[in-house]
Amino acid sequence: MKMRELEQRTGVNRETIRVFLREGLVPQPRRSKPNVADYGEEHVAAILAVRSLQYEQNLSLPQIKRALSGDSGGLTVESSAYLHLDRLLATLLGVDSGTVPLDKVAFRNPVAAEDAIILEQVGAVQVRRRRGVPHVSRVDAEIIALWAEMRAAGFTEALGFGPAVIGTHVKLAQEMARSEIAEFRRHIPPDQKTESTAKMLQQALNHVTRIFSLLRMKAVLDEVSDLKPASRNDRSGRAQGAKGSGGT
Image (tube, rainbow, N blue to C red; front, side):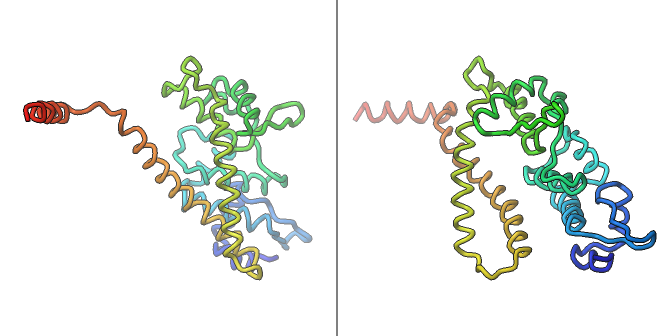
């Protein structure tokens, strides 16, 4: 496709697309002649991924480039951002999925290699080797890095909170995903265009993930409410109530 069609497909003007090209965030076009540029579906995917990271995650172009290099430390983003980063890197490299060397995670998790082995055993991550070097996807890299934050928060092996406990969440996530996709397929007309369906699914993933996080937070707060120590007023009120009932 030519630039005009690329603009129409993405809703992004050519000046902005050229900025993405200069920054190396979009693959260079194929050129049958010096002044003729041909674009493909990979360019559409890359541009839409950059736009999603900009508008949904409020990331600047330098931040996106930094995250693509494997350095996402200090960036406050939602989990869906890593799916966009994977998709973007895949288009840039021309591979099925973007990965980063596992040692890139070490600055956020000093024992990333050890944690990755355990997390892979419970199905939470997948470690792949490229030229003998272990790699993980950006989503998996974030899972490994976040486990270090869990450990720093006090969820240590000494208390029985090793990475293997994530196995429970893996099973729940798989069951939830199967249920969501089945429900999604049940309501989507079979003749709906693939692009429209994919866009709906992407938006649903973003919104439902946030809704589920809030529902889970509410449920956890309800479960731990009994663990909170009673306030002085509560204890005093209960003591007076007990005294009053004892005198009747």
